[in-house]
Length: 150
Length: 185
Image (cartoon, rainbow over all chains, first blue to last red; front, side, top):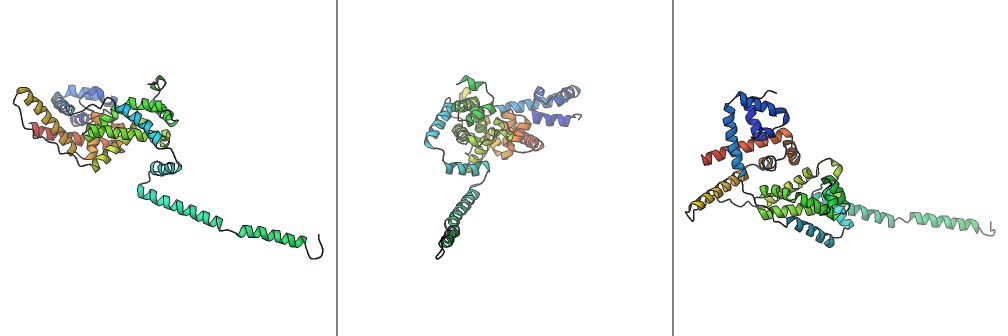
């Protein structure tokens, strides 16, 4: 793409006033355009001033012990909260699957209902036992048929 | 700090962290806490809030270390920038922004004080103008200009296409330049 003064200004906004920081593919073109259109020097100077002002923005350094504090707290955190199954599951659904809280509540309730239903079905199913008893009884009947033991 | 971990790249450190190696966690905190503090500070305009957010983000990293999937392809820093940025945006949404005072009365008319207050006034104005930008423009400006990240990485952090990110930067800078020109000229 051939750069024109309009693109040059856009590139200043995108990449800054230091042409050495521009992407390699447009850097040389920018330098050549600057030489071709001396008026662009004034625009560059204007944006240099603008960037200087942006850089005067207030900044406070962090506390010296920030890193140490984080590391200490993480050790303390480990002692406080042992890793349990409930915690594991809630984090799995909340974090890995990015479920929001309402959805997480619904999934939890559905899971609990499904588990309870399964237990209920399992414990209330006597048919298996009845069949086994019946087979045993039939066998006894068969073995102890009136009169003759086979 | 353990020298074994100093030579590892970030992604290898994360593997070590996932194996429960606390020294690896210490190394990654040491390596990156200032950088992410800077990001948080520029979004929150408060040192205490920025430190809290960075602390929260790193503690989440340690607490949920097993849930980070290094195979998802993102660099650790790109991913962690996203974590910090999201925490900052949530924080800003919950907290009402402090009004920035630009009407600083001169209490002492000594030359040095006047210059100092003038500088402080300009800084306060600049902060106000930046806070007035739409959230995404602030993000784009912060990541590309103040953090010095590439346009591509900044777009990944924000979760938008490159063209969209470039549009945000241009609009942010154009708006700021107009406001600053209007106020100081």
